[in-house]
Length: 473
Ligand code: SF4
Image (cartoon, rainbow, N blue to C red; front, side):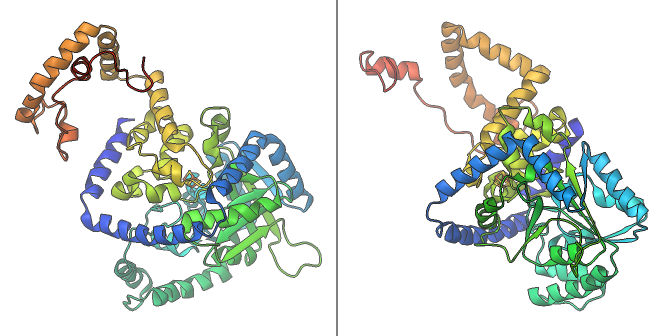
């Protein structure tokens, strides 16, 4: 437990001090913000669209049993093999089994955060398969043996020069600073990988219950090739990806593109409903859909935080989060970074081990405001803090809160301690930087705001008791 928190603090301190990294992320996000606002402005009413999206997701999540059953029945009727995995291990085992039964050696994979969540690549490689990522950003981080940096932009933390150096080293290409040339280098390698792959693995952005189809939205066309060329297609997705109706995509596809990438719509939007049917000339011979629970149903049972299952993984909350912009995606040490990661990781991986993420927030509410499906993210961070404290308070938390309650119940003592505090507070500067300073973490990089010269009690007395402020009597 202490290790995860310590790792996070160490990584966050290192990355925050890296001005080059900060500049890179802020420049990238500036241009995203301009585009996002431009395309948000094209909606007749963005807030109403948001409200409609939240209501559709509410319906989907609150009737998940019914919609999942409908989705599975429709898929199976067209010959899809559907596997419901309670845990990450079950999902991995099933896919490894499919690979073994079909003597799969080479796998091409399009972007899937759910596959990252269950560490699918590692399991398949352990079973003797070679896995190639086909999304450009994912391919770059795979070559660097890194995890994705961001839900939507996995290689956002790298410059063109760094990518060029990587390609020179790993692929033997010539140095170049041109994005087009870098893309062409990767493309030449990937084309060969598509042709020799025995299996294609994808994620899914949405699962449409009404038609029994998964929807994949992307900009590079790699998901289409990944799912169409190999003879086996395996899609892995969380059970929360359900949408009730096909027409819901008319709202969710543009919304995901606008909020997530500052685009009106992504370039390629595909629906997959089963393996190749009689009379069809292309498509995979086998289509497997793995529906992952992995503690999502526990979150579903939590009425207070259930709406975090509405998430469509657009990444908008990361893009506006002051913590993410400073500490970067890798510091979190989680599959899902930023505010949504801090909300759901304690549910998916254990509250006590990951509660520190909920404390790494300014509670500014920018994430909640940015979320296209209106998840109350910053309040959920507070809920996690409260739940962690309730479940297993630390010794100093017990003392601090007991002291606080003791003081608040004794007005005279409260007044005296306020006075003493204002007299002795300036002394903290004498020990600033030393081990005795209780404010050390805070004052290391900040000036503590000056204390008010007058307490509220003194102010109130001076003002006269007759004039009551608004809302008080
Ligand atoms: S919580 Fe909202 S803003 Fe964040 S990734 Fe999910 S849908 Fe997007």
